[in-house]
Length: 202
Image 1 (cartoon, helix red, strand yellow):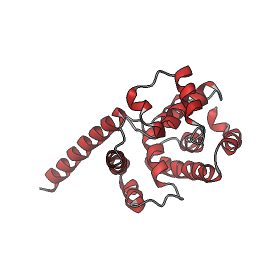
Image 2 (spheres, rainbow, N blue to C red):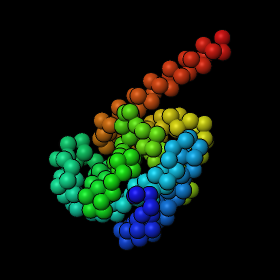
Image 3 (cartoon, rainbow, N blue to C red):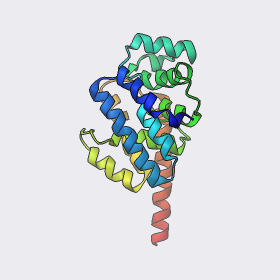
Image 4 (cartoon, rainbow, N blue to C red):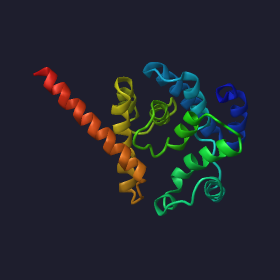
């Protein structure tokens, strides 16, 4: 089982990542496990996914692109225009084809931890949020999203997607269609929930 390979994975990410990124990965693993316990997901899978989610983060873009196009697909214009998301795509194919990771839940969580997508699994949501809320994070509003994550994964996801999409738009960067789909799905869900709460209160 891939969840029993954590010692191997720690050695692998230690070789591949900067000291900061390695520390971040350990923190994401801890946070993902904590959120998994809170929300009823597989804690072992969450921890392993957190450990390896950024395995390709410090690899040069050319190598990442070669891996993606060798094992996965020819990248779309939107993907080509946003190299910051490549590490999630190249991470998934590297883990699958080079490290022989078999667990589809873990692989999918790694694949979508930057863009999110619609119809996300519980584990995918947990890794997405854990990446925002790990212990070393100190960006503006980190305490807000941490507070939201204690109440609802969806509430935290909506805030995280708003944060990222706004940041990309303000920088003149492209927004991946998966992020738009994820945002719309969560926004609709949260609005419906708010309407039900109002109806119940009447």
